[in-house]
Every structure is written in structure tokens, then in C-alpha cells.
Length: 261
Image: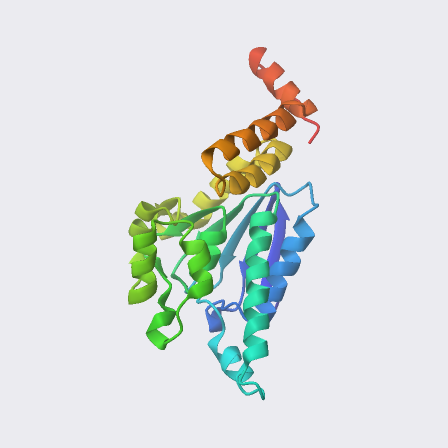
């Protein structure tokens, strides 16, 4: 059985991490499967949104500590392996951001360490009631420095620092309050509600969403004046697109647009 199950239906790609015995840890194999799957989507115009979920009792428990321990057996104590591992993980996370399609995390059970990083990296997230989030590597002497990058760009810095230094979990409602996830739903509604959110995105003009996602992440790191100058240019690009012209005309004429994409 595949470690990552993949399905495309109704414009939505669904990636289901399928290593429940390891709590869907981001093992070497899982990282490779995710990265390859994201690469395959980059130019796939039939896919307009992506959902990531996990099998078993957890969404994702972070890096595979057993593999990391094995890597330590090398002559250099694991230095080269660890550097390569964290570089590969960072590249996979960056691929999520670079995708033209919005990516929604469907979260249940626990999302900890690099698993929490994956939730923070996704463009949106829906969590089941009872889900716990943490960056608790500090509890075993490993500060979650790479998960910190995504986490600290999602929630206020003092709350991020508290999570990182105390190793304590937060529940789904607190995660929503802090901005780590979009909504909390009953466990039995998790798949349906996540699907509904992805479907809303998939209904929109794909090229507009692609332009908007790229601009969203670019502008958020700019000073305000630069952000306005940049997004003004983006708006011009978007306005000149033929399907945007059709969308505006349809709105003014009170009819449904006929888009080419």
C-alpha cells in the first residue's frame, strides 16, 4: 500500500498520508512522496485546490525519530544526514507555498513538530475538535527551529515562543484563536467541511487564484509602500486577463461567467 495515497476528483487533489503505524511521520519516504506529488501538480490545470490528510489517530507527528537515530550512526555522527533531511523538509514546505493551487490541511488527532509546521505551511487548515498542536521537540532536547519558521509566520510571536519553549500542546480552539487554523469542526464533519472549503476555492477562476496566492505571500514580507506598488502591478496583470474581463462583464450583465480556464 502506498505511503501517500493520491486522488483527483472535481478539480481537487487529495493527498492522504498513509503511515498510521508511524503516526504519518515525515520520514525520508514520506517527504519524497509529498515533494514528488506537489511537483506533479505545479502545471496541472485540472487541479484547482489540494487537501492533505492523514490516516489513523494522528495527522502527522513530525520527523521520524527512529530514522534520525539511525542516521546518527554515520562516521560524522549524522551531521550530513541531518543537514540533508532538514533541507529536504524545507524544500517540501517551500513547494506548498510555491504551488499555484491553495493547499488545505485536514487535521485530526495531533500535529506536532514538523507536523505542526506542515499545518502552518498550508494555505488554510480545518481541524477536528480534540486535535492538539505542538512544537514540543524541546521536551526531548531538540528545539523546533525549522517548524518555528512557519509557526512564527502564522501566530503572534510571544505565543509561538511560548509553544516552542514550553513544549506544551494547544487545542484546536486555541489554535483557531491564534490563527494557526481556519476553523474547528466536529470530528464526524471534518472531511465534509474540508471538502467544502476546497470546493469553494476550486470554483474560482484558477488563474486569478494563482496570481493572488503568489502575490499574497510576496507582499506580506514587504513594507507597506512597496506592497501597494507591487500589488498594483499584480492587479493590472489580473485585469488584463481575458477571463477576468469576462467575469466582470458577467457580473454587470447579471449572468454566470463563461471562463476558458
